[in-house]
Figure 1 (spheres, rainbow, N blue to C red):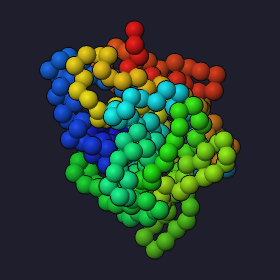
Figure 2: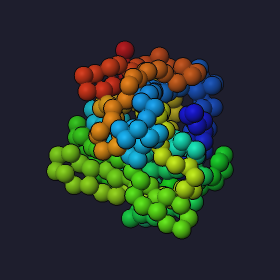
Figure 3: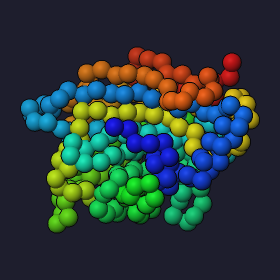
Length: 261
């Protein structure tokens, strides 16, 4: 089940800013409308056992949002006997030195610990968990491959690692490793990709949302050995501004927000 909007944003995404934006949207009857693509996976993996040891996907930010507008493009999944995991790219994330800028992020709710080359920390509030973030200077028009996979075990449980790779030069970077209880098992047979405007200038009209266009390619599991059975595109509810859309493309889906009519 997809976690609540406010819960996702709390994990280092600027919850206060989102609440302020939400209040403005309510006052003006305007606000961003999120885009979603749900993927349904086969009930068993190629070995005939339930669950998956990895999910991987490629995304290309076709149009970069205006300066100062915070967007998050994520792939979210869940453990068979556990909680929620997501990974993706952001426009205005936090760096280890306290500045904000482009980052890659990896989070798991109710996890046990985290480590990584950038920020690795616990979050709390509407739920608890661990997240890792690294500064990552992604570029519009460039394809990036993001992956989450079971990478090991320790005395606490199983370890899951996330990476991001520039498909142009093949350079891969670790986002972080998060440990979860062993009883959680593997990743389940449902996931969702979404785009979200989580902060930015006040939205007084739908033209203030700020254009974002991203191509999510069809994800795979278990090192590209398994593909989803089907997918479903839809907008977030409530649907505020009508200038968001999701369309099928040859390689996957195009998610757009802030489209100028």
